[in-house]
Every structure is written in structure tokens, then in C-alpha cells.
Length: 112
Ligand code: HEC
Image (tube, rainbow, N blue to C red; front, side):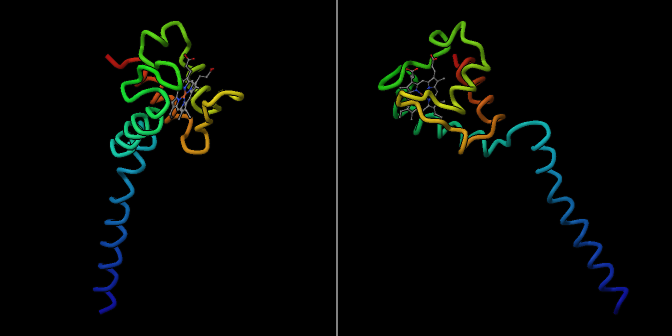
């Protein structure tokens, strides 16, 4: 009886470890595909409300690659995280990690 329970405990531990593996690998290589989808939705719905659904501008300037050309990635990431004080551009730092803001920056710079 004790042996039996012991084996179940071991199985449970192995099972729990296997559950954490995808999370660990997602954390050290990049942003999970679920989170990428969330960030894309954020870009369209939240950023899009000011920058236009197609990033062609509105209340905020257009954010197409040609508009951002020449602006360094760190500067764009900083703008996303810290906003532009004195303008309508809010700081997204409370909602996004630095890595996520960098990912959005790459998306903006690379969008066809
Ligand atoms: C409430 C309106 C608003 C929202 C929402 C908003 N922005 Fe902005 N954003 C602005 C405005 C206005 C500016 C121009 C600020 C200035 O005059 O320097 C700006 C500027 C920027 C710039 C700098 C562009 C450049 O050419 O230097 C980037 C990058 C940017 N926003 C990205 C984003 C992203 C990414 C999001 C969503 C996570 C977002 N913004 C959401 C209003 C907004």
C-alpha cells in the first residue's frame, strides 16, 4: 500500500515537472505564441485606437516601417514603455515587459 502511494507520488512529480518544461523554455527563448497573439491584438486594438488600425496614423503618428526608418529600435521601445510625457502617448511599461516592448518594436519595424 505504501509502495503503491509512493509510485503515484513519483508519477505526480514527473507529471508536474513535465508541465513546467514548456513554460521554462518559453521564458528563456522568447515570448510564447499565445502572448504573441495577445500582443498583436493589443497593437491593433489599443495602439490602433490612436495610431490607426493599419498603423497609418490618426491621433498618433503612422507607425509603418517607412515612418520609423532611421529611428533606433531602443528609442521606439523606450517610447512604448515610457510614453511621451506631454502628449497623448501613454506609457505601456505597467502592462508590457521590456522584452514584449522589444518584440512589438521588431514587429513594427519589420511589418511588410
Ligand atoms: C491615446 C493615444 C495613443 C495610444 C493608445 C498609443 N499611442 Fe503611441 N503615440 C501617440 C502620440 C500622440 C504619439 C506622438 C507623440 C509625440 O508627439 O512625440 C505617439 C508616438 C508613438 C511612437 C513614436 C513614433 C515616432 O515616430 O517617434 C511609437 C513607437 C508609438 N507611439 C507606439 C505605440 C504603441 C506600440 C502603442 C500601443 C502599445 C501606442 N503607441 C499607443 C498616441 C498613442
